[in-house]
Image 1: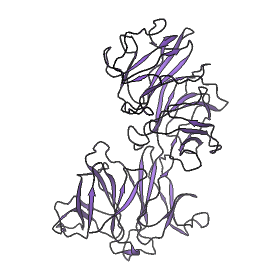
Image 2 (image 1 turned 180 degrees about the vertical axis):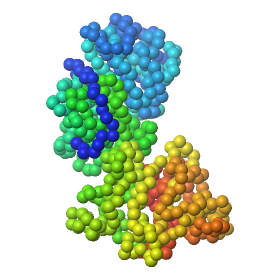
Image 3 (image 1 turned 45 degrees about the vertical axis):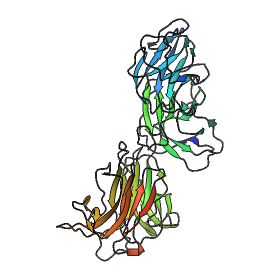
Image 4 (image 1 turned 30 degrees about the horizontal axis):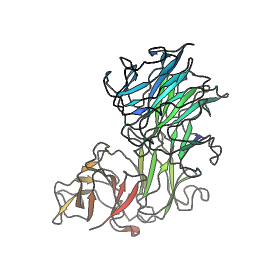
Length: 523
């Protein structure tokens, strides 16, 4: 995996205020790896420093050092920080993605103890650092990283002590220290500006390691793209971020934290915690992901473009694209659909295009979207049908808190089917009341968190919505729902079989990455 920092044209999602510089002539070191996790004793009887000093909030002088704590451990609760041997915590109630103020401490050697908040002198330690020597005039950012719930030494909880030594950046640049605290991410490399992906500026940055204390110089005054690529480089990024526009002359930490295995919008999802000398600037979520589904009966295989950039290629009916990641946009992107291989480089706009242009909805960082190409092209539209080719977008928003049930969002994507009811079939009839009533093309069920369905094997029927209710289904489908499942279920195809694409259900599993699409079996 490689982290590349790319100059972007996208507008920043977050503004960065001026940053108060913090510099030191000391080299960057990582301390605390020799500490002890899940300690049975907190060692409060030890002496808290060479001169018995007590940390206090505020700046230091020639005889003192400064230290602060950043909470970047996604599964850890609020924590208190104690000096070993102290009678009260020096930092209390620090939550994930928060940073404490700097504490001014007499120069000396300190051992720090991390406890779950609230805590007392007799509370057990979550983690005890090794002795940390703080030099007069030095500033240290201590980062709580890893997973409290892990017993694996490669991902377990620890404290990373970053000795700040930012050098003044070149004119028009900012100085950035990158810390790799992603507990389930492998080693990375860093290629500022994406100048040469095959030879990144920092070839290898291991998990829980950081760039040199002097920082990496990055261009200011513009937003940047931070691409995270598979190991070895040269392939499409695994994920990407849009940074704020940096301020020239500033210095700050960018801490990769959270879990790649979680959804981007999950509170524990992988992201970038941006911290300047004044505190946390913000938490950057991943750029939005978009998946495209071809659901236009009779339409040929297509490519999806924004402007002259191809987003998806070779989509045939019923197929789901690979994830498409773009910078966030408050106004959306112009989209056009072309016959596969006949994109804008070789055709007049609107002449050989299958359809378009369309405009996507606003796309937010940390979110995922399903875009469905549906409706009929003019060449295949049945007489009297008014449902022209269109792109319809739906945001993934399934509940994350209930693992015992399945959650489904049903989308009516069949352009020649009437409004429908969907329900469980018993003895050839739809049981009343139906699970879903009067779902019209091209809408989706509510709420956005999904319809709760208990794990079961069911026969679902789809019937035209009428008054009184029609109980004889048009089609029936065998469906098995599982605990923890999260899926869009698209009623796709043509009820009359236009283009050889008959009515069917397509289940799109959003609980895996990338998403998958599976046709549901007809009864």
